[in-house]
Length: 72
Image 1 (cartoon, rainbow, N blue to C red):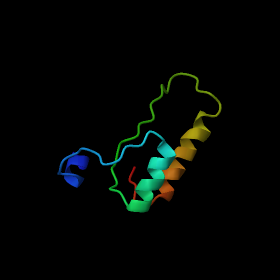
Image 2: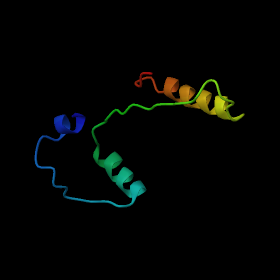
Image 3: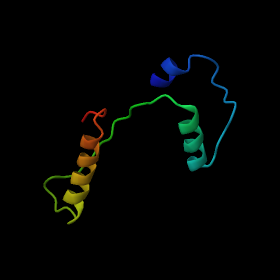
Image 4: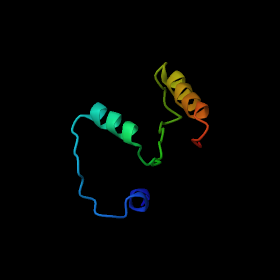
């Protein structure tokens, strides 16, 4: 739905990229709409977790908190 609001016209692309970094460079240079997608962290809290799980979870949450325009 977010895409439909930003691009209400014919969706036939004038350009196609199969190389992600090149596509990102092009979009950043030309400007692009921003789309939001949920991110889920799912784990079983009654099961032993790997030692580095809590550090990974903390890093993920810290990253979101540093980007003030993202909401958790």
